[in-house]
Amino acid sequence: MIEILKIPATIQEIYNDPAKERSAFLKLEIVPGEVFRIGDSMLKILCEALNQGIPFTECGRTDILNCGISRDAQIEKGRLLTTIEVLKRLKYGGTHSFASTDDLIRGIEEKIIVNFFIGLGNVIAECDNCKKPFSPWPNQGCTHWPGDKNEEEKVNTYTVREAWVMIVSTVTLKVTDYENIELLTRSLELDKIDKIKAMKKDLTSGPRILTKSAHHRFD
Image 1 (cartoon, rainbow, N blue to C red):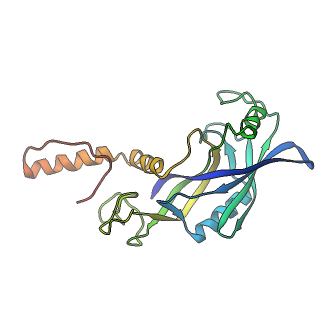
Image 2 (cartoon, helix red, strand yellow):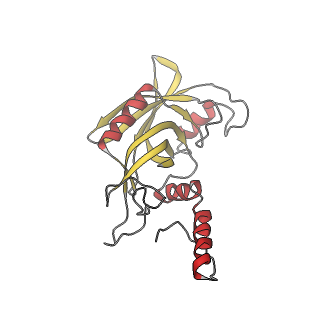
């Protein structure tokens, strides 16, 4: 299981609705990366969740109240689109990037804020090579590391089959597959796992130098 996964989204337009003058509306398209893909069944689950209303926040934060909510999601020719309703003139308290949602809306209108994502939790992703679920633990699933090249020199990719849809959010930097792999590495504390494995080998193979690997690989 993958604890957290970010799926990039791009803004198609921002508009107003005369019937709801107190709100601004963002039209977003969900655009999965090359390493972590969205299966057809998961695409429908995402669409349903967005229609029910997923909180919209800033910078991936879940410790603050949302300033908007998702609505009117639909799948068009394999593309997932959703509308985000953001309440105007909502003044923030505590620590936020802006004083109010008017500032946030203006930043989006002026194309200063351009990056968005959907945050998924408790993700079950299936390896496209061996069709097993991802697992960092030996003998408990696939051990093809995401983004690495396999025996055929092809990049290891995964298809998301199940997940909890947590938030829609703005973000400073564009979400990439590399960032998701880094998140995965940190969440699993893989450097610590590597050192533990190395220490166990020391007991049987004698002295050796411990090296810090970029990510965990299984023998």
